Structures are given as C-alpha cells and as structure tokens.
Length: 165
Image (cartoon, rainbow, N blue to C red; front, side, top):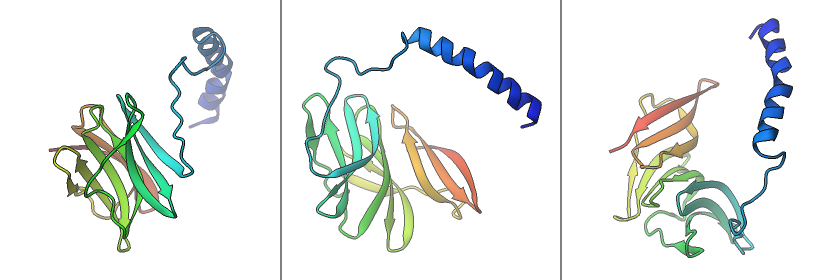
C-alpha cells in the first residue's frame, strides 16, 4: 500500500469510528441474560459459537480436551471418540446445529485437519489440496458444508475454503 492511500485510510478512520459510535450509542455491552460463565477451574481457549452451541478447548488436569456446550441447558455434550490421550487439540469450530465440529490437532508430530460428526460419533481426516501447508486456525460455516482453514505455507499465511462431504 502506498503512502497516499494509507494516509487517506487514516484520515477516514475518525469518521468511521464516529459512525460506529452513533450506531451503537457509544458502547458495547452484553445483552441481559446473554452471558454464560463456565464455572470451571480449567483454562478455556479457541471458542467457537454456532447457534446454541459453544465449542472450545479446555485444559483439565493438564490435558487439553475439545468440549461442546449446549447454551440452552448450559451443560456439556458428550463427544465420544473425539478426544485422544495422545493428541493435542489446536483449534475447534462448530456448525449451527452442533452436529459437526472441525478440529486441528497435533498427533505423533504432525498437524491434522479433522471433521467430527457428533450424530455418528465419527472422526474423518480432511485432506488439503497442497499437503505442504500446516493448518493453524479454522471456521466452519453455519450449515457445516464449508470450512475456511488458515494455513502456513513456506512462511506465508493463506486461507483455503473447503467444501465438505
């Protein structure tokens, strides 16, 4: 980006902030009754919200696990066959039905991209077009049919969008 377009972008920033402030009355706040606190001594990371479902990675007893919560009942949902003792989850994303979870994990020194079907308790490895890329982050579409994956390839970050079966 050249100096002139960058200066123009910076000059527009105060106006954009003013517009955003007027739309939101100047403050961001939680909606009443919308806050969920996971009363857990565990460290949680990589949250993904899909409809009434919250997927995240939770460290419990020194072990990272993928967990799924039903926000209507505020309870965890079983994920049989997903969490392995010898695997380290890196990132997770859920669809709007909480049926599909996409997952990046490290296993035996390699990084894998996986799709988990909760209804079938089935885990499927997803191939990438270019196997030289290392997945780092992901986002599953609401309908669970597409997956955006951030990859590191040769020192550069790229995003691939995969159509899922």
